[in-house]
Length: 155
Image 1 (spheres, one colour):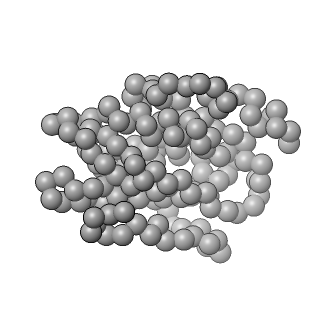
Image 2 (spheres, rainbow, N blue to C red):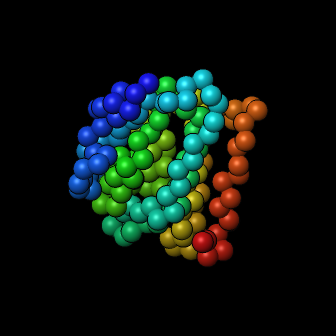
Image 3 (cartoon, rainbow, N blue to C red):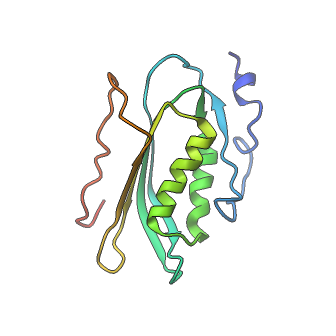
């Protein structure tokens, strides 16, 4: 598999790209998995995720962690960064943000398995943590704990 094959259809990597206006307008790209047939876990960590409360418009902050077992595709990291950044001006509850990210990734990269942890900082004194996964964790792989502490000034 040549680099031209893997990277041919990418529109954002290596170019100057502006932040998408919304998650719906964000382009999430994928690349062919150069290690097809090898079972391994990919982890993305976004410790400074932000969105807006859909009612008050106030900012919400989260630590988002995504783990997945690739199939034929990998999430292209710059496009994922831009997709996650597009939530900054997006009004949505914590649950919707977290699960929407998972479902969009699943649709794009069709992983063999995926889990996401959305560790939200308190609003009104209550932190909300959201967890989603596609099924049982894969057997025989090193799957580290997400390691985000329960809220005590997270960080």
